[in-house]
Length: 173
Image (cartoon, rainbow, N blue to C red; front, side, top):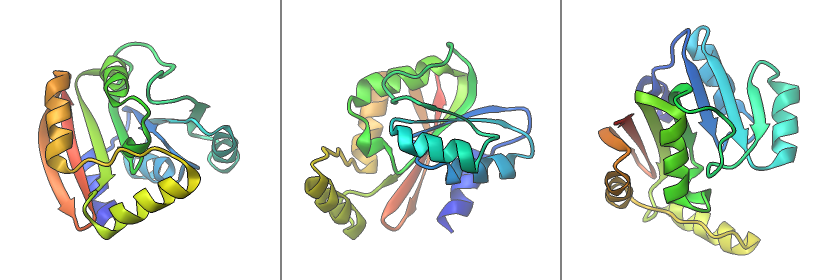
C-alpha cells in the first residue's frame, strides 16, 4: 500500500530527471526507474559502502556519495526529487532544503516519505538512533510543514497518512 501510494504521489515518467536523496542501497530508486518507463534516475547516499553496493546491483542508476546538505549537481537540474525514510538523518535540515530547492526546477516536485514520530515505528527509530549514537530529528506533518513554509522554497501540495508514516508532495516555488 505505502509503495503504491508513494509511486502515485511521485508519478515518475519517461524523460524526467529524478533524484533520490538518502538512497541507501538503491532499491527504491530501482523501483522508481522501472515505474517511470524511461526516467534518468540519480541517487545520493552519504555511506560509501552503500553507494558501491548500489553501483553493483543497479548500474543504470547514476549513484554517488553525497549528503543532502551538499548535492553535486547544477542548479535547476531535476524535475523531481524525493527522499524516503531519510529526512530524519539530515544533519542540517535548512541547508538540505536549500540544496533541494537549488537543484530542483521551479515548479518541480519534492516528495517526502517520513516516519511519524509519535508512532511505535518512531519510537523504534529513536531507540536505534541512541544505540548507534546517531542524532535523529523526527518531525510530524505539522512540524515539517512549518519548517517547509519557513524555508519559502516549497508549497505543500498534498499530505497522506500511512499509519506510522506520511507522504508529502511539495512544489518548488
